[in-house]
Image (cartoon, rainbow, N blue to C red; front, side, top):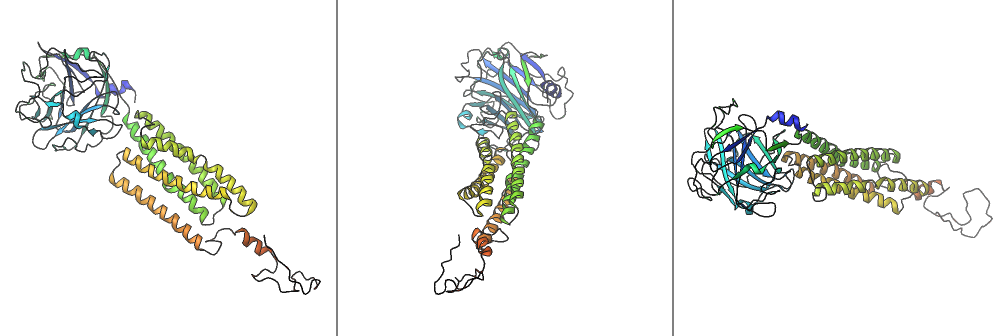
Length: 473
């Protein structure tokens, strides 16, 4: 989805709120959607290399399961703040670190510098968090005209937890946006709560002395005019209850984003293709030849599986790029690239093995290399698939299904190998060994050497009285 389409979809409206002492910058989706505000005291030392006071405001109807604001251009490496209901009529604010397109991890060091201010809480169907952060760093200067930020949200039933490490359900569709914010428009004159008109609240306290993670019971202050579940007309002129006047202003922020429907599609396609290849197709090809199937057909099956593996790799690379993931530091991605590269060598070993076997009717060293190399690669591929399921935050049922199918196929292969080895030379229906082939072709061989003076070629007793040495090669 193009950026312009994303902007139109969310109908982003940017509003600047100002009073004698504040000029925090506020941006929000259209009516009845999350609102975000940022304020930086003029004397703050905050930058990309140092921490300093930073104020921000999160607001959304209670129909939202969680709402998040992040400092950074992508989830990996971002400083993320998540607001959700605590189950007691208030909100919980969780400070987290992004590690990629997976659930961000709670960060105790970041959490220690988060302070909920007066006006935080839940009222009239609206969740509000007014926050002061002293452990935050920007990914730009405090006066940058294009400071990178991200925002995300998810609807659904309330989390109702006071834990700052509560599990977050992944947002669906396009419930995420990136923003380049002009922080010069977010400067506030004093280091005090900018979200309460005329506020003299001492930083570090809330209206009722609440803890840094759980909201007070004071009346929440709305920057978007208190729009809750019943107000969706989007008319800011009759909704304005915020700090000072509200003036629509589309300058100061540029929105962009990734088509998350495309990410979901690529993720499903990559997972399905790779899962089928490593759990079903490769093991089936190996079982087929162990059951006595044609070596040529075995080779064709495995080459087709290899082609499918390369398609899955391409989908995975595209998915990684869409998610701006680091291919060298993400276990699943790095292992996947290495394993696919090693798989490309397997056909070479297979061709050499086939030529050797046809020539000598017996396995050579490369034959054992081909067999065990393939077995090890299949195991590694299945394990890496498990890493992929974890990276994608797949459901528990999905992980169980993957493990069960992989286990059944692995067990079937082991059983086939064991029964073949215990079989009488030929295994189940396998090809004859070289010795057996020679023995069948050697006249009169029945396991007992010829008697003295007896020959099976019909010749006379020219060598009577002398035992003939018979050697089979």
